[in-house]
Length: 264
Image (cartoon, rainbow, N blue to C red; front, top):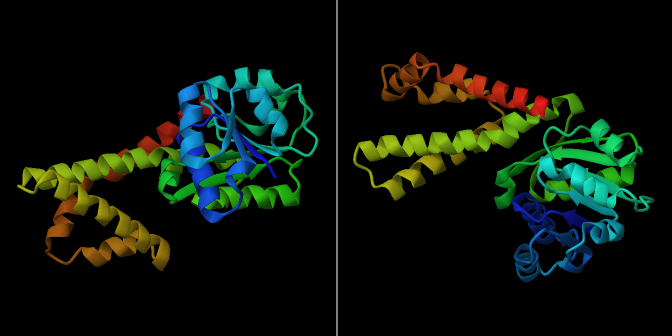
């Protein structure tokens, strides 16, 4: 099986790295294209995959083709490759805001398309990817795609109408978490802790808290209550966050991302 990538940016590197780490394919089974020779050379050297300067060449070779370019370049890429034979091929799209119907319209035919939304924690094998497939995707191809997407974290099937929400709660939210970690660390620095140490404490606290939610299955509110002793320090911090509309602001941020995605 040959897996092709058009675009070799961060997300493509995460997917390729996950597949190679899990032994799903060998480096020689992967081919990719990128605009610059420097990017292609970097992937050849780091992952030992095959590369090409032509998107069409990659599309012709691939049985599973991953479109990993930015959304604004999709139409240009599709124009380059849509004249090839698609017999036995499946397309994976990593673009936010581009529906299955939109992709099939641009290709001019009802091709097997899997739309997915990974996030940047995929770079460290802890991604969470929302997945939906067109009816043309066969069960064998679907299982292969889920195996690929699960190689760098979790892959969760959702209805397509939820994909814009996935993009917000999973795709955009790492930026919110990074901002939160930075703010936690800034507070510690303000009270005298060295910055490097503050980042370590803040990041590890977020990592551990997330694992508690996932591994215990407990409601986040229940876990919060476990930390908030009566008359203690934590409940005073919670009070300050609530006073400044912390939860409402986070909810608004997610909703804003969803609305933006729906307009793309």
